[in-house]
Image (spheres, helix red, strand yellow):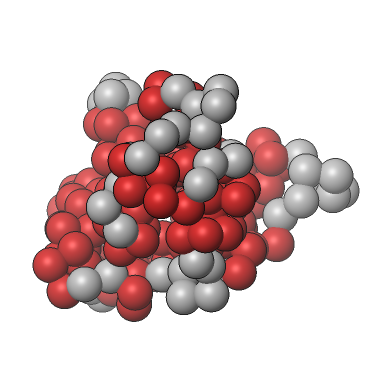
Length: 195
């Protein structure tokens, strides 16, 4: 199949990813057709299959890329210090990273149900790897006596739910800056893990 005039793989591939991300976040995976994605990118619908085998693969690639980028960003940082210092670093990192990527966060939570079981298992494994970092911080804090929590796994899920929730309401034009919001959340996380 001939390529649309002006279409180049190094440009069209990333544009395809961005268009799909935007459309999935706005309308939901099930409501978006490959034809809509092609129109958004500016190519013929059949040309999309030069870049991606199907819509499921496109969703999977978006979710996997988000988790791999998140893990690389977190694991690339220095995680020294006390458990409390590491928890503060994790809290601020998570909020700041995710506030810059609201569409990725939205589809990462809302569209998991649309993955095949095999693809879901891969994404779930990546998510667990990220959650394990926080759980280890909480376990270390429990051992050091600085955190008073009944169950590290439940606390991990609660903290992640709390700090991820900021992406649903925060607006850059609002009354609080991103740093102010991160500080407020850090205060709440501290209270959640102490007696």
